[in-house]
View 1 (cartoon, rainbow, N blue to C red):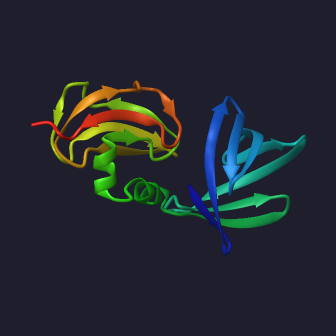
View 2 (spheres, one colour):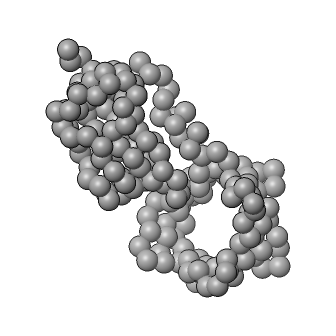
Length: 172
């Protein structure tokens, strides 16, 4: 996801999460942190042996936050990350058709698989529902096709650009 802190825009990706241990990438630099939610928007963050307490206040629209850390306040805006990832994924519909596959547009979890291998789909049919950053998105086919192979299962966590489904667009 992209966030804006003041005039600076940063790209943040969740790489892994096990309990409170979180591995994130911020503008190409990886960080291992331990994050625990305490009470009502207060978080305890441990990074490199240094402890931080952060208060997070969510704005009405859910895309603006005010964060207080170490006597400093930061205004953070969540940029439209879903649209950004879908744009990156859909460089051109011809490219997607040539690839005959569906790949993960971002690190996410497979919520629902709507079809099985061998199913015939029509342009716009939903193949998978994914969830990232508490938002669900439907991955659809760009033209009539048949599912050759589904390489993931419901509940699987996948990485960006991981191959999820193989398609055959040249079927009659």
